[in-house]
Image (tube, rainbow, N blue to C red):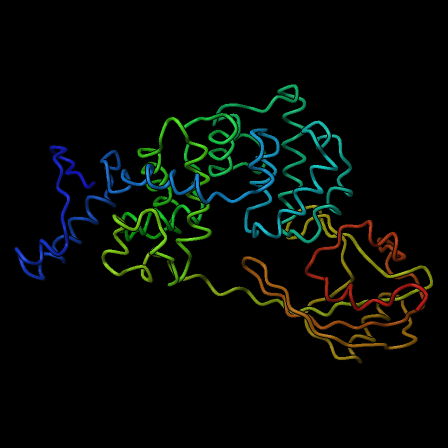
Length: 394
């Protein structure tokens, strides 16, 4: 239902009825009033979102996804799953989650783990700072809380790598606290159902959406409500122009569906163009294996292992000069290849050379055979080059 902020009287407006009474202009007036009321600063006002919990929870009970981390209320497992799911598809996360739990079944196991082994286990999921933050946070939990998971919003938010969404997910799912967990899926659902034109990428607007969801969250099933919103956004209220409105539990009161604005909502400011970085990657084969070096401890892909590379796309002649600067002698140029990798804000366009060389190169390089290389965390940005390496014995 829609409510007027001044007198709390019901003012639900039927679009067709208003058109008959007042003409087409009423719809424009309604939209102006609606955006002011629904998207204004006073978000204690009950909104059309109040109609959502009942139908949504009924739909969720019949359609909830069966996921490994939903078979438990263990805050440790819920935390790990939520961190893995950031910027990553559910299908990709499931095998990583299962291997992670087999390797580190408790928060104490994670706190005591070797960082190199953790990075190797995480390799391919990307956003590697998530794994380091998991380990650092586990150490805080083990040392400061005796291994017991923090149970307040403030304590969770103080952990490395834990933000508003993750804290809300843990508190609601593991501990039954009525705290919203607002991610991209939830923002999309809330914007469409509420017909709100605020830019969901603006952090100030995100806080408004969070308060709005907090106001309508059921106190009895907050964890189920948050997970239902996640499933609705992932499977029904899809991004782009393709929501499956006919199967949506909010179909009867969704403003975007009523107004035919599914393609317009949610509003997102145009994304900035990704910065292009060109690189030349060297796959160098020596008597003791393939050359690797470790990235710095901070910044993109911090602390991971990579094949030596330099800025720019070098010709073979230029690449040969670079090898000589590293103190290496090329003996056989075996292959040239191109690859691309896209990060959140950067696009790498890479040329690679597979070369047999003599020499040891810089002192901080590691020459690793295949077995050792597989134990190191090499980012997925270099997967195409890794696949190009000859198997030992070839």
